[in-house]
Amino acid sequence: MAAKPRVFVTRRIPELGLQKIGAACAMEVWPDQLPPSADILREKIKTCDGLVSLLTDRIDGPLLDVAPKLKVVSNFAVGFNNIDIPAATDRGIAVGNTPGVLTDATADMAMVLLMTAARRIVEGVEDAKAGRWKTWEPCGWLGQDLANRTVGIIGMGRIGSAFARRCRFGWNMKVLYADVYQNATAEKELGATKVEIDTLLKESDFVSVHTDLNAQTKGMFNAELFKKMKKTAVFINTARGPLVDQGALADALRKGTIFAAGLDVTDPEPLPTDHELYKLSNCVIAPHVASATVQTRDEMARICAENVIAGVTGGKLTAPVNPEVEGKRRK
Image 1 (cartoon, rainbow, N blue to C red):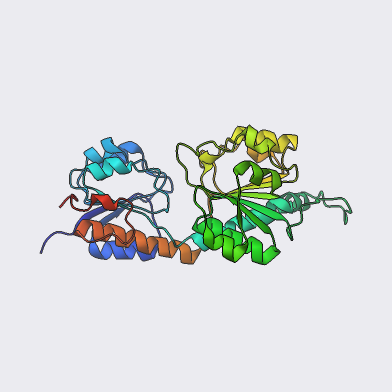
Image 2 (cartoon, rainbow, N blue to C red):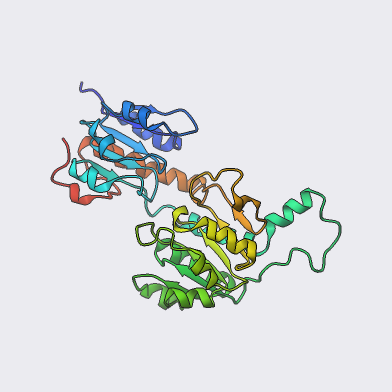
């Protein structure tokens, strides 16, 4: 009987995925809470046929060169900024991700952050716990209304559209969006209007980011953009931390340039505990948990497992990132 293909998993993922991989492959799972160091990862994959990675693992050409048998990298994430895709393709290595299954969970999280930041929930809870809640306060913890307001969405893809649907049908919000592409479905079904980003920032009560991270969008939310928002605006980011100049955001929140912010992603992750954003009562920071539901993470694990198993056995990946590698994949 032929030996099972070897797969290294850089962190424990839900059991549904591990069971699938373990049944088909000789699997090793990194047991620690923190990811393996670059040196350890390099050592672990030297003789592997497959690799399951997370966004915290940097997968580049020099790393791939130490693993001449590696046939597939299966990223347990929708994003794949941690992987040098051209380098993998040049070496005949298939790359997979886990798209499509976390749309609703992430849209829900954006809505949770919007409501939490707009209504000053965390600030109120902390004050109550600390004994600063003395009585019913006519002017205490005043937040922003949600109903019949205007939401501006940067990036009207799957997640942006799902978030817009919640805002439109849940709170009767007017929907503006900025994107390089027109979303005719959102315009027809939600009454969404495509506008230039300056118009969106000027008119929106809530601004939610759902765009990709690339050379053009990195650091796009800077001091100049925050100054274009309403003083009552709430800024939400569930996309990628590096999209935001966090120093500029902290300054805008501290000076009252904008009302509040809700973040599920930061740069770096986690933020140092002494970071200035943690000191601001009008900034809500969650530990990158938008996809953290049982059903969503199980679905991510299933697709991730299917990708790595297909990759090591020469099959078609469920969710390929680099389909152009077909025809030159490693055998």
